[in-house]
Amino acid sequence: MNRAIVLVSGGMDSLVCAASAAVHCDEINFLHFSYGQRTQEKELACFEALVQHYSPERAKVVDYHWLREIGGSALTDTSHQINTHGVGTEIPNTYVPFRNATLLCAAVAWAEVIDANSIYIGAVEEDSSGYPDCREEFFKDFSAAVASGSKKGSGILIETPVLHLSKAEIVNLGMKLDAPFHLSWSCYADNNEACCVCDSCHLRKQAFAAAGYTDPIKYRLG
Image (cartoon, rainbow, N blue to C red; front, top):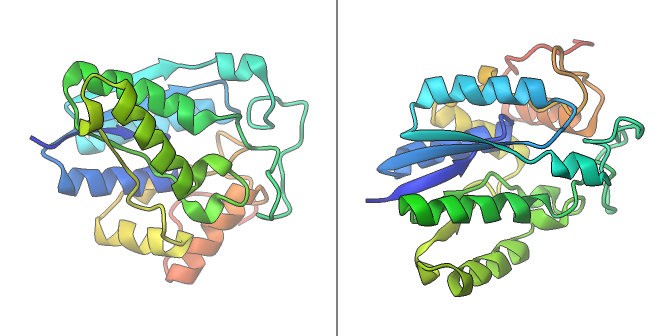
């Protein structure tokens, strides 16, 4: 059996990742992390809605609030303003230190317990200029660590189905997979209406426009 654990943040990329896993796996299990991010409330609501939509075999929410306690990111520290100037070549202040590695560690531990052989994560290399833990090199290195450090050896695979897609291509793939985009959330700043100005909102709006679709979520400024 191809049993997968899917990291589901509630965002657009993880949604399409989950939709892909639902098609290609015999069994899916959803894993969500609450780490004190500004939009934690909305992301959790999206996760719960996606659990209802996809009916995974198991669904768990992990309390990772220590990431908020250590700080270092505008996503968890409201004393810092969130970037609104677009993706550049430097690491933005919304980067959460080594987040993907810590999330994957928890997923690997659960995979050993339920005998899952794959872990799906919706990382996008297009974001790697800002987030070093979204690079293909990182996932190759992490996979090597899993192979040497888990009891299953190389049996647990890290799957990144949207890693090399543009944001517009992710929207197109999601449409083909009938992904419920209305149940996803990308805004870094607001739990009620997408702010329309943060980097994540900008990338999402740009992606839907480039793909030729209307984004179903509500934006504060239209």
